[in-house]
Length: 406
Image 1: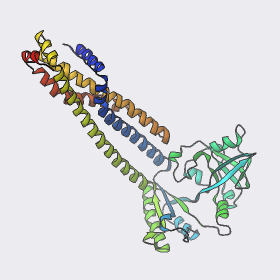
Image 2: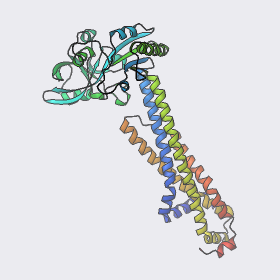
Image 3: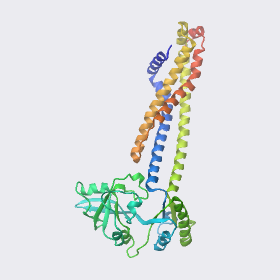
Image 4: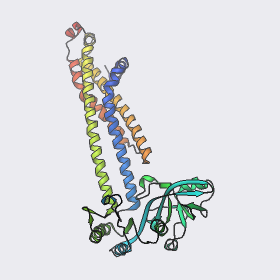
C-alpha cells in the first residue's frame, strides 16, 4: 500500500463516521484555535505597544492627582505654579505642559450638535504627542497665554459638523461660547492615544488657560495633570524620582497613599507586557491540556476502530497485505484526523484574532511560521497518538483476526 491509497482510505473512513470524527477532532480544534488566537493577538498587542513607544518615546514623565487617595466630597490638592517652576528646573528638562482631560461639552454648528470631550492643552501638545494636522495649524504661544477662543478639532468631528465644507476659519459653539477653528488633526488610532480623553477623532482641543477659567473661575494655575518631556530616557528616569520626592515632601500622604502619582510610559509598557505574558501562559497551558485531551481522544477512537475492524484487518492480511501496510493505514487515519482538527482550529483561531484586532483597531499579523508550526504540530500529534493503535493493528494474527466477531 502506498501513501496515496492510505490517504484515500482514511478519507473514506472519516466520511463514513462524520459525527464520531467531528467530536474526536473537537478538543484539537479548541486547543489549536486558542493557541493561534493568543499568538496573533499577542503579536498585535505588542505591535500596538511598540507604536505607542515609538510615537511618544521613553522621555515622557507625568504627574497627576491620585484620585484613589480621596473619598467622595473630600477637598483635593492640585498642582500649581510652584510645582511647575520646580519641574522646569530639573536637569534635562525640554518642555512641559498642563493637560486638562475629560471635560464633556456640547459642540454645535448651524444646527448640527455633538457632545464630546474638550481637552485643554498648550502650544506644545501637538508636537509632544506627534499629532499632525490635516488642515490648518496648532496653537500659538500668544493664543494660549491670552486664553483666546480658538480650537483644534478631530477629523470625525469636522466631518459631522461641516460635512464637505472646509472647517478651518469656521466659528463653532463649544459649551455655549463661540470658538474659531484653526486646525483639524489627522485621523488617529484611539488605541494608541496615550493620556487622551478617550474621544479620539471627535476631540476638541482648546488652550488650557481658557479651560482652566471655566473649571476654576478666578483661580488660575491649578492642574490635574502636568506632562514633562526630557532630553534622554536617563534624565526622565532621574526626574521621575525627583518629582515624586518633591510632591511627597510638599503635600505628604493621605491614608498612606501619595496625593499625586508620578508615572512613566515605560512603567506601563513593562506592566502591561507582564500581564500579557501571564495571560498568554495561562491560555497556552489550557490549550496544551486541550491538545493532550484531543490526542488521547484520537488514540482512544483509533483503538476502538482497530477493535471494530479486526475482521477487515484479517481479510486484508489473508489476501497479501503486509504488516507495514496495516500500520500505515491506521497511522495515516490518525494523522489525517489531527491535520483536519489542526486546520479547522487554525481557521477558527484566525477568525477570532481578526475579530479582536478589528474591535481594538490593532494591526492583524499572521506569519507563515505560525501556519507551518500548526501543520507540523498536528502532524506530530497524529503520529505520537496514532502509532500505538496502528502498531496493535499491525501485530494482529490473520487467523485470529478472521475468527473475530464484533
